[in-house]
Image (tube, rainbow, N blue to C red):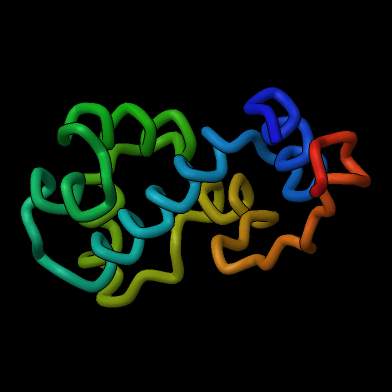
Length: 113
């Protein structure tokens, strides 16, 4: 399957580009680590697969409207974290455990032996 065809089929099946899917999976992990640990942001970023804490902060803020530090502070202030409403609204359709239906190469016009 070509890269172009993979992207097209992946987006059709998930509703997300491969890049957005990976970003959402990483952000979901960041959210969980911010809620459940006191791990430094640099380690949270590395754990979630971001290049550095700045890249994580930019992606998190772009998708939630608040910084990771503020998100964590709000969780601590409330003594529990029901999550940022905008974050959950943005990612409501994302399920990193979603199973994609098998794709036949022949059906997609690819080579099938």
